[in-house]
Image 1 (spheres, rainbow, N blue to C red):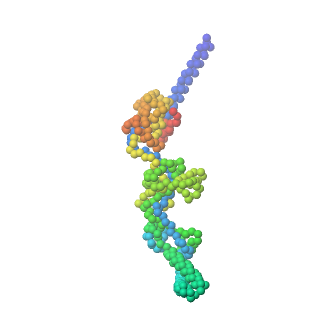
Image 2: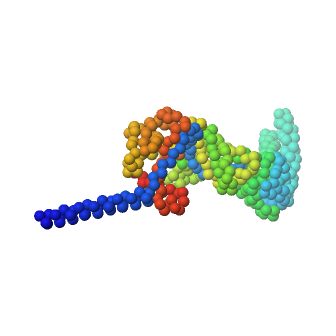
Image 3: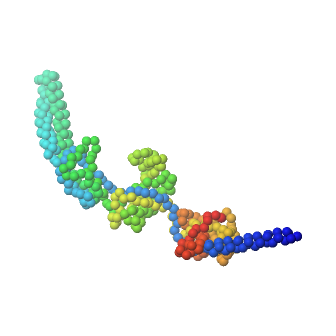
Length: 395
């Protein structure tokens, strides 16, 4: 009997100790953590989906000015940033050799012209004499042959003279358009060779107040891009400025590892060139700047919307404590309100979702205060400041 009483006493002591430990543990936990519910008021705003890309800023019209003759650059009359007019002299090449070639071509032309005139008159006389039988067929045929050959030589010399005159004209280089020089590739005294391709001397942009951005859009995103869509972009040179533009053209083409087609393949990633027009009244956008681009593929303005995270919120039993849940609406899109310890679900229908905000097409009204997320603040965080530690992502 005594042993049984001792056993009961031991069990009672252990039970009391367990209760004390649980009370101490739960008391510490309650003191260490505080549950915070963040809320927002339902209102109207803009919801937009967009595609991101990078591109290069370029002038809308850009002309490379070169020369079709080889020689030495004698004079330069334009430099970087020079404003030029159509037909304005911007460079001259050394003309000594070209003028010599022209003089030689003129001399050859004059000689062949004289020979042609003589042979033509001789042939015309022999035609009449041959008709009267006063010269043999052989003499007539010889005069006709000499006439045809002189005519051919004369035409050849005429073409050579025209070419020499044209080459001399190429030595005077003028601007083909009104614009500004954005690149100069030669110096005075430099020799340029126009053997297989025309060497570029200057690059002239027509109007820097109208620019374009050539962007590389990934193949996964190109399906949503269309002409006329709104574009915003930034450049590192002006990080606080947001520039506006419009999609002007989507350049199509087969995949290739070269840059000669509109779509290119680099390490198995296909991209398409999208041309975006942009006004540049302040001339902040410089040619060749890199632009970080957002192409808005779908936009809705002044619609009822909530933060997307509000649709992901769900009351969690261990955190709500004694709170009750009304109308859980399992399986539907919903937002939650809280009055005291009571959580109420409100089913909603949704529209456009841009990842940050979601359009609400029905189920709630403006002005309703809904829960967006739950956060847990511990004692250390409370003492350190107002920062919050996010709660565990479990339901």
